Length: 123
Image 1: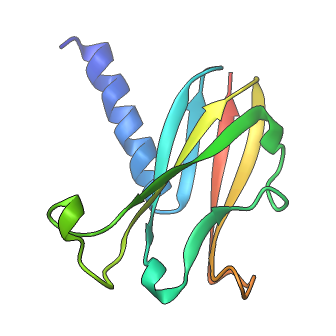
Image 2: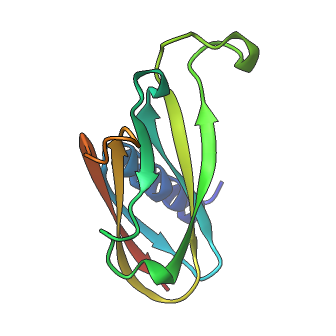
Image 3: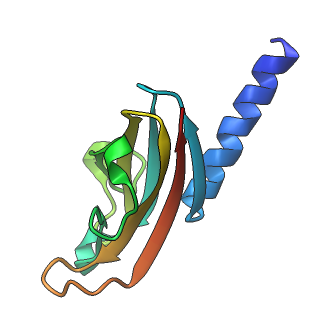
């Protein structure tokens, strides 16, 4: 591989690592989609959701639920009660900046126990 490709791959991996840590910044071209993930344990009732109302300028992106993958060595052998991964797809719709807020809460309590912010630069 050429050096520019390796640098680009390294930058993407750094961005994804930051997003996993909850302090993310993503740079997206219009039409580009990235997936972010959070550790989630729905057996406790706590699930992650995108909080559109708390976000700033969310209209420049489209946020979609990418599903949940339970812990375990195979999808048909999930570890009951163990945390898994919740995925969200973020697609840049138009150029601009946004701050997306994701919260972990029990839907019936509406009180976040965790909040993660992702800064988006769409070009």
